[in-house]
Image (cartoon, rainbow over all chains, first blue to last red; front, side, top):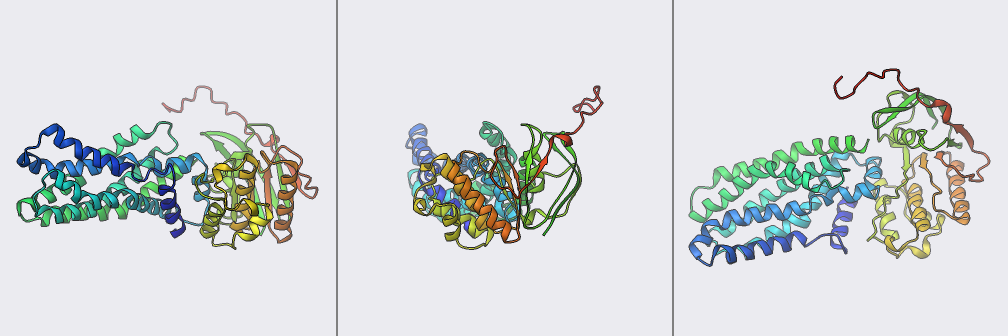
Length: 218
Length: 205
């Protein structure tokens, strides 16, 4: 499983692997918002948590269809299915590799972009914490969507339609956590719910993803 | 390790293509499947490899003992030959890649990215995966596609070594491999009979 994890990371950073694509998209989106909304600090500060979270979510969505599509096309997915790794392990490792190549860089760069949106000072810690807790759920849920659409021609759009509604709870509680942090309110509830969604997704979805892959390979 | 298949029926896309397939393959033996295009060779091999469930019948060997090689080689274009093979060696926890590179004459290419290989070289790399997988039963779908005569001879030598080590090999192929000891199974007689249910509508049944 470690071998698969390292292979996926290596493929992501080699030419054409798509690493940095989501990051660049996130950067552009956040730079464009002040241009569209205007430079008013108070307005930007109010919408910053939502913009940063929506941006992270869309950036994550960009690379989802690559999780299984390339392996399906070149036949590796068939070979992985017959290899001595359980399919549940394969999908979990692929979700983790996706998080390390998209969610983690987004989490690390978000505070810098918060400055562009004049995010209030107390919110930075909560922004990093909320993304660190929430983006793994985006990867796991996205892997499930990718597993459902593997083998479909032009499945990317369908994948977005399937996955975006499933992202709603993470978005709501993630952005709420940052907003409450910015205003100095109690953050316990959204923090617990955000962590709960991530843990629940990690516990349950690998089984669903593995079943979807097995059926799609038949 | 004996592969016994009894009364196996398998389907492709919901349509039965083969039924009543029975054969046995002992360790050290090779069996070549033959039959016209579309007669179900690939479907049978995918069923044995555990990629799809059989409609009926029994297979004595679990998919965990089978190394499957499909039409596609599963190579990553941006990884080198050695990296591609080392990945599968780690996944299977088998021997190192040195012997496999040697066996398929890939030693000189080991630092080359897979996207820069010719079709035949890619095929040789795909087949080298079987050596590092170190599983007793090889199930191979058209293993010699795009191989030249010298590479086919190389491949046959690798298969013979596998058989000598007590392994078994089941191959679907159209060409004569020069593997004289291999038995041949003609699949055409096992073609599934079309069901006499013309009014049957799957969607509204």
